[in-house]
Each structure stands twice: as structure tokens, then as C-alpha cells.
Image (tube, rainbow, N blue to C red; front, side, top):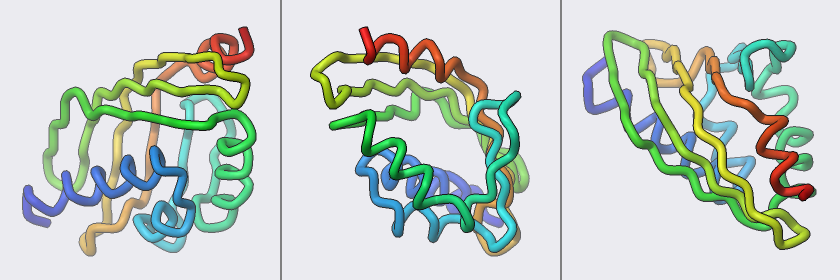
Length: 128
């Protein structure tokens, strides 16, 4: 995989996530892709559970903005330090920072995502 391909696949993932576009988001994954979001939670199969995942997102958030603050690629892996700003359906705002590690197949599809962040703190902010 070329160095240009890896950041493009990761950028597509984040773009689809922040626009809350489940169909575009799921296209970034290989058939058996697994997500640990955050690490410590049970693994989630991207292709099987994406509608449920986006259903939960759309229930909580009116808007998401995610910046890729630092991207480092090596081989078929990419590490991204990111910042997410969310506007809850109730009008309250939340901010979270995290690091996600992406493992990609030779075809450029995401095989595994391991994200390190405090999702509970983010939800507490938007709940007030």
C-alpha cells in the first residue's frame, strides 16, 4: 500500500463519521472488520452493526466535527490523534480527544480500528 492510500482511507472514515453517513462509513471496511471503540469495550463488527452504531450517534448528536490533529502511517497501519466536538440534540456541547490505530488490508480497506478515548466523559458533557 502506498503512503498516499493510507491517509485517504482514514480521512474517508472520519469524513463519513462526522457527516453521520452510515453507508459511506461502512464502505471503508473489509468484510470481517472489527472496531474497539473505545478499547476496553467489547469488539464491534463494522459491517454487521453499523446501522445500530449510527442510530445511537444520531439519537445523541445533532452535529459532529472531527479534526485529524496528527496522522502517522507505517506499513499498513495508521495512528491518528484526533479531536471531536459534538453538539448534542439538547443543544449542549462536548469535546473529546483520542487516538485511533487503523490496520488496513492490502486493498486499502480497514480491517481493525482501536480507539483510545473517554466516551463516557463526552456523553456526560452533552447530557449536562
